[in-house]
Amino acid sequence: MLDVGMLVYAGLFVLAVWRKVCFYWCCGMWLSILNYMSLLYLLVGTALGYLLIGFYQAAQIPVDVVEYPELKDLWSVGWLKPFVLLAPIATCVTVALGWLLTESHIFEIHKRLSMTKHDRAVQIIALPTVFGLMALASMLPVFELTTGSITAEMLKSPWYDFQPLNILSLFQARQPGDKPASWNDAKLLAFWRYETCMYVADLFEAWVLYQFGRLVLEQVRESMSKEEETSALDSETPAHLSKVERDLQDSHAAVTSLTWVGTSLFVVTCVAQSAASLWPYLGGSQEDQEALMSHLQVAGFVTSCAAIYNLVVVEQAFHRHFEPLRPLLKFMTVKMLVSLCFLQKAVLTGLQIFNQYLPGAMQTVIRRVPLVGDIVHLTDLQIHLFYPALIIYECLLLAILHLLVWKSNEPWYKESQKESLNYTENDPLLLKG
Image 1 (spheres, rainbow, N blue to C red):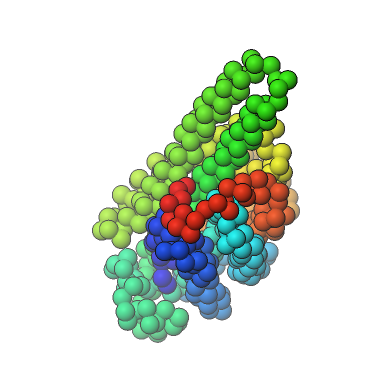
Image 2 (image 1 turned 120 degrees about the vertical axis):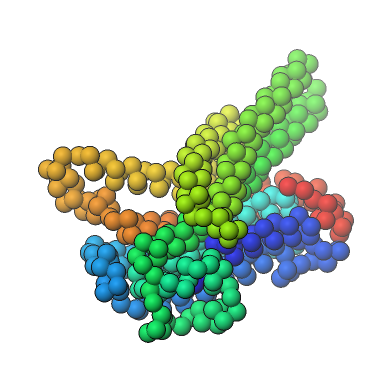
């Protein structure tokens, strides 16, 4: 099994450089297929194809309870198996919806209409797609674990799957002569690959939050500039309002600076997490990696809370300037996405820990509560299948909401249309952001 998390991490880095160099044009030529968003969906489609084949091949192999007796209760929760097996279909729908909506924005960018706004929008639209893909990728190594497909040879080097002979046998079942790895070693490898995928998803989420912050604060600045121009043309406007306007602009600058503190720390933390998750590829031990990741997880929880708080402050402080954006649903979808990163997992873990400290009679009562009782009593392995599947369905829901919230023909995009039409063919090479 290829480490899809590491491959997507490398792909995202290359696409970030490509976006900075070429944007949507290169040497005056429109990059119809080679713009960075089209390449992103090509990367997503390729990874999705590999995951679908590997996922359903592994799903057809019986659970190896002979080698791993720990798996005998894997599907003891009746609804868990169909819940997990339908998740790849939801991922396919999420990717399709994201691509269709992205295409409508790229069409506007091709016409050079509000290019920066549309570019930030397509990155936000891509978040359910990338997050759902990485959630699906995190499930594959866990499935490989349950079928005994992780062999002792795989544990010798983290680069095992990238050797030429092993790449050719990616979709072949374990041969009779292959010796399965011990349960603890195989579980360690599967969970490491699982965490790598989730950290890459968190990194893309942090980047999208940064882009959303820039989008809304640029909208506030644009709205303030228009109000200033209107008041300057109004002969009846009292002179002292110019000072008030300057104060408002100063407050906007202050809030902007404070906002970047939280979002930047969130991005830096996610970059550190995703880089640390790849530490074994550089020769480091997984024991040292786990010690580092435990600290980064705490930092990630704190910075994600700060990032959400910043969004709330900006929304409340400048709500009047966001009216053209229909801000309620836009802010709501972004907050929901940020919660996928650390808060949701922390709540799920907290519920399980809380349940363990309850009296036996109370635990029995909770166990009989439909769905909730099953979730709080899931084993560690079951959680590693349930949680990414839950995220996939949430990403599908958010992709559907994006169809309503991030339409490419909304009036607020056109407010800067005249400025975009004045660009020359070489201007996109100089665009920043």
